[in-house]
Figure 1 (cartoon, helix red, strand yellow):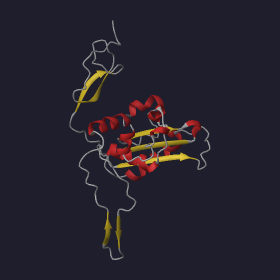
Figure 2 (cartoon, one colour; figure 1 turned 180 degrees about the horizontal axis):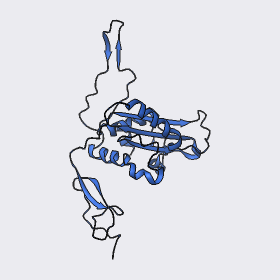
Figure 3 (cartoon, helix red, strand yellow; figure 1 turned 30 degrees about the vertical axis):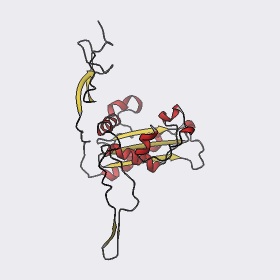
Figure 4 (cartoon, rainbow, N blue to C red; figure 1 turned 45 degrees about the vertical axis):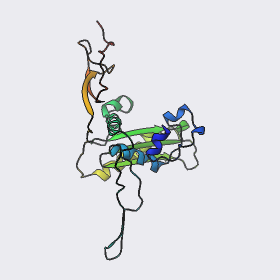
Length: 223
């Protein structure tokens, strides 16, 4: 996990002596800019995105004095197929309905992947999310690290992220995330994720890395 986050550009999780199993649930300090850039790699098909504060400098006559050079990365830092599967999960508004409802702050009216987070005692809350052409991260909290009153990621950072994304993307075409090679779709029983039988009342189509499609039939529903 630490190796992966380092490849994604997060620099604050390298001291493994400070962490335990809670790290997998977010129990480690990260910088907002670095975490947002890491989500940018997911939006970018697995290729790392290094934040840049200055894109271009011109003189008063319009001559370009400096222009940011593309990184020219040849290899993704995360398997593009895995990046897409994560994106597909985070952009599934139907899957968010049980927790957030159909019209939550994470629903911006177009395809978008998003994740919220809330730390212990409501000291911090986060919303990170992206479309195929824009990634944004929002942190909400008190500068002295004092607790807030039941402000979670969906109620604190979520609305800010929602309004920013809608405003910036206003008038831009609605894009879908490109599907990389090596993925296949298969119909599974919605409850178990196994191959549907005649007894399974509800099925759904899911993406799988080629070769990982379930081979066993559903056993949850039986006569």
